[in-house]
Every structure is written in C-alpha cells, then in structure tokens.
Picture (tube, rainbow, N blue to C red):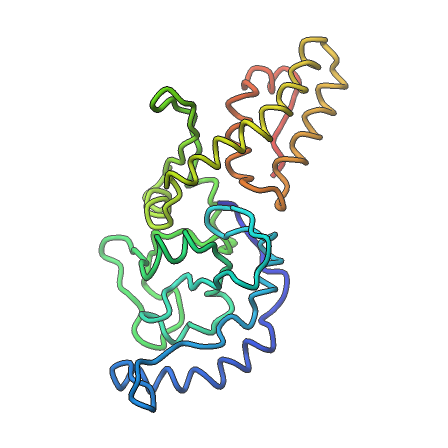
Length: 259
C-alpha cells in the first residue's frame, strides 16, 4: 500500500447521485433497511466516480497495489462500510477503487477502531472520535509505508516476501484486507523475481566494475522503474530494494530512495 492523492474534486455525477440516493437511504435506514417497495434496500450509483478513482490510483487496487486492466467490472469500495455508514455512501472522500479479493473476500464490512474509540452517530461527519485501525491510502496525514513493511523470509524452502505491521493500524490493515493471502504472496514472489532482481543484477554489475556514474545512473533508473506511483507493488519493491541493495552500498555511493 502506498499513499495516494485525489487529483480532482468530487465528480458532478457523484454529487447528482448523492442528491437522489441519500434521501432513499435515510428512509430505508429508518425503516430497517427496507426500500419504498418493501424489498431490501440496495445502494446504487455510488460508482459515479469510478473512472476518476481508477486513474488517480494508477489502475491499481488501493489496498494491495495489484494492477487491474480496466475499471468497468471492478469495485468502488467504501473505506467506511456503506451499510454502517450509509450517509457516507456517496461521499467522495470515502470511496476507493479496489480489487475483488481485497474488497469482497476480505474487507467486506469490517472497519476496526482502536479500543475505547467511539463510532460516528448517524449523519455525523468523520472522523469524530473514531480512531480507525484501517489505513486510508488517501489520508494526507498518514503514509502507509510507516505502518507496513515487507520482509524476506524462507517458508517451506521458498523465498517469500511477507508484509508485517509496524503499528496496530498496519497489523489490522494486513488482516482486514488479506494482504498476506496465499495468492498475493505468490504474486509478491513473482514480482521480486521477475522485475526487481533483474534490475538489481544490472546494478550490481556496475558496482563490481566500480563505475560510480553507472552506479548512480543505474540506481536512479531502477527507482524510476520500480518505485513510481504507476508501478505495480511499489511498496514491496521499495522494501525489496532495501534488502537486495545493502545499506552499506547505498551509503558508500550516497544513494537515497525517492520520497
């Protein structure tokens, strides 16, 4: 997970959807989540800004950073779940673009808070007295890299890159979103082996030759390729580079990670 930035204000289509749908949700909440026709209420039109989210997130899931080919058949996810926080279901700051696995298979309606924190009452603006333990990648005051770190381990004879929480929020985000699920661990391993290591090998050749300019140029090229916001699994790549390119080498040649 990496920090994300919203590049545009709320889309007009989402505002129009909220004006039409929020009164329906308010009435349904008062009626025990029954619609005006007596059937279970269904939230609608909250995906009006999906394409903008897809672009702002560089075509990646907000949580696991897995790249998605297109937005059309993927989910708009609610950071605060839409049933428990129905008045925020059409709020731009509460919406994310997410993959099916993170959203439907793992997070679902979970939204853990710190012990002693108080949930918002209906129609109150966030954050109130809440202290969420789920990281929000769009939160400008918090950097997910400070909460989650990938570490290299050997499991069942295989090299694995495992996400670890550096804080309670990091721990809970990994758990809630399934960021250490087996299918992702396989993708992490493939990513390091197929995209990170080959670039590190080229870099190491420059180090062996003592080519200072080649070393610095190689580092810059490697960081641009692996750590740009459009790069898949950017957070993993950064932590893998920190392991595969020793700190002593980085210090010797004054190599730093981009912010």
